[in-house]
Structure formats: structure tokens, C-alpha cells
Amino acid sequence: MAVTFTKPKKQFTWLITGCSSGFGLSLTRIVQAAGHNVIATSRNPSRTPDLVAEVEGKGGKWVRLDVDDLNSTQVIKNLESSGQEVDVLVNNAGYSIHSPVETFAEEEIRAQMESMYFGPIRLIQAVLPYMRKRRFGIIVNMSTGAALEGRDSMGGYAGAKAGLDVRTTGLTKVLAKEIAPFNIRTLTVGLGAFNTNMGSAAGMPKNPLPEDYQGSVAEQTMQSITSGKMPWLGDKDKAMKAVYDVVVGEGAGAGHEAERFLPLGTDMFARVTTVRDYLSHAQEVFGDITNNVGIDKRFWGLEESSQPGRMP
Image 1 (tube, rainbow, N blue to C red):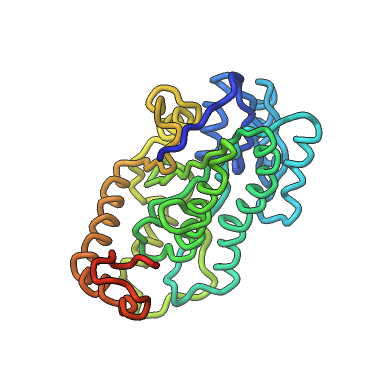
Image 2: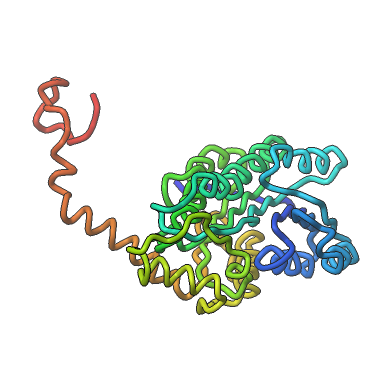
């Protein structure tokens, strides 16, 4: 049975991470233009004084928040204790390092997980008690198409995103079920290739590329992204307007507030199709095996008419 979510008749307060550029900045501007309250965050607000002035000049607030910091949850506690109720948490901050899985340094993998898995989890855990008490809240996690079907050189980045994802048995898929009874919902946004500064912000791997990988798809992808020559197919502002619409249930999002996965980008349609075909192929090839590895019915004393796979 589908869950029906309700929302209060008020403007929301949005806490958005990673607002100094890209999707975070775009969403901040869209949310403010619609009259909502915004708490924008970044690691170093002092580096973007003009943006801070822009947001705060329109009635918003800009605070320092490093998602890697174990004490990042204090931001939410401070806001709530001052009477600023966080209605929408948007986990957007992140970065990428590109390398074949074989050559990733362990600290690089751990850093990716810290920023895009553990960091968001900390903030989710911090905000949920307040949302649960109010019986309303929305958790938005910005994800990537790379976590859906995989891309050469994106093992660390995609793995960190997929761990939090709603499309696989990631944390958000479980979370959505647990918090739905409290009128709290989740939205995972699967983003394709957009005109952000992802390429210029991408980190270079510590270890050199082995000769066998020279000329590989992994190397070509790394060069394309870090050189800024990756073909960006999507408009970030259009994408963030779609996110806004689905969160508030307006425009294209009207009637779709309960949806948990929003794929965005022309390249995402093909990626979703690839994953669907991948799973369908596995069923087709191994379907008979899948359904024939159960315990003998006689073990449970079941009749031959019992449905396969059912426990007594």
C-alpha cells in the first residue's frame, strides 16, 4: 500500500550542504526565489564572500559546515535550539577522485566514503529526532548515475554514493521504510552529466597508472573529466528546479511527492535501462537456478502444494 505524506502549510527551512558552487548554489537560489528559508553551508564561507552576502541579503543564513568533521552535527543542534526547524535536509556536498579500482590508495577510498557516506549519515541521524517529533521532514540525497551502472575510474566515487543510495539496498532504501510512519520521506536524486565544476574539482589519484591501463576507458574517462572536456549534457538549474518541484509537490512534482528516486539528465534514461536489462538478463539466464536452491520441502514437512520459498 502506498504511503500518503502530508506537509504543513508553511514555507520550509532548507539546510543544504555544499553551496559554494554547482548544484548546491543553484538549488539555494531556486529555493530562496520561491520564498523559502535557506541555511546554506560550505567548508570555507570566507572564500565566497559575495555568495554569502547574496544569500544572507535575501534573508537566508550561511554557516560553515564540513561534512567530514565528526562534530558537523552541532550545526543542526544549534539551529534547532535557536528555533530554526530544519524541514528539508539536502546532502549535496562531495567530490570525486578518479582511478582504476586496482590503484586506489586506501586513504582515497576512505576519504570518499567519509564525505559522501558517513558525513550524510551523521547529518541524517542528527536531524531525524527533530523531524520525528514534528512528524514531518524530507531527506534529499544527491547521487550519481555512476552509482547506478558504474563507470570506469569511478569506483571510489560510485561506491560511496551507492552505499547511501535508494536504488540498491543502500542505507536510504532502508531508511525510507523506517521513517515513513513518521511522515518523513526521502528523495534520492540520480544525476547524470551536468554543467557543474565537477571536473575542475576532481582529485588526482596518489598512485600512478600502470602501463596496462594506458589508453583504457578508465584513463580516457579520467583525462576527459580532469581536463574539462567531458561533454556536459544537462543544465544544472533546470535539474535543481525539478528537485525543488518534487520536494514541495508543485509543477512537474505535483502528485509525486512520495516518489523516492528522481533520475535527471538525458544520459540517465539509458543508464536506468542498462540496469533494468542487467537484472532482467540475470533472471533469464539463472531463473531456474534461482528457484531451485531451496531446502527440500520434506525438511519442513510441507505438502507438495505449498508455495515454493514459503516458510511454515
